[in-house]
Length: 58
Image (cartoon, rainbow, N blue to C red):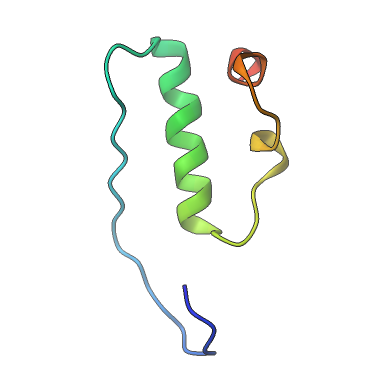
């Protein structure tokens, strides 16, 4: 994203998750990075919390 007013389209994103990662946390990480890709200037409230308890609640 840049500061001009031109409409920009992004058609793909690559999310890489290192192994081993608990399968329950994979969805959290994918959701977080998709959120950052779609709206890089603001984080959804779901992802504002930090630490393992945030991932556990996901």
